Length: 296
Ligand SMILES: [Ca+2]
Image (cartoon, rainbow, N blue to C red):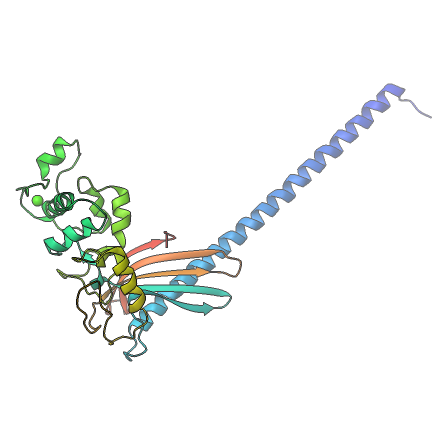
């Protein structure tokens, strides 16, 4: 017996079909979101893993820098050391800060050379040098083409010359006329932790070597290639037309870059500046600067 008219039976069928479609859509969306969360969790896990592996690289670098055997101690001249850790490969580069140009203490000559290494005229290189000096000296008396408070104000800056030493390397970008592009090129060559007027060519990066009189880009590149082949304590190769010297000495502050790449090519990197020497908490080094996942 059937009490439903024919038309109503059709409506019920359509309703059932709609509910089925709706349930399928809901089920599919749940499954998609569960899968997305699964993928996200894997990415977070890989990122965390790679990050801690990069940190392991930093600790390995400190260990190798403290190696009491000078023959097997790692050389802090920016050469790449590699280590395997589980299924990951870690690349480590150490640069002794004494190889870099200290923007607080460098001689005028070295600063002029630094800016000239960007390819600008000698007059412009002199101008930027004087602006750096005016930035860090305590007086308000500007150099011939330098810049003190009045000059910053005239150019519409909300601040004047700092009249104190640079606290960090990125602060260089606040000096009048220094562009981000200029900074990016100079960044690897400068420091606030060397404490020297000059650079130690045993550890100097390319752009810092190019700040020296008569050293062109190719000279610096060739010197670095040859330098990577010698062992600590050996005679350094000849730089440009300059003289050579035994590679020795070094400071206590180092920039360390570590990049960990997992077998699925997921990676993380860090770039830190550390100072060797015990801390009150018993660590063998102190972190002065830290940056994650920057360009390497
Ligand atoms: Ca000043």
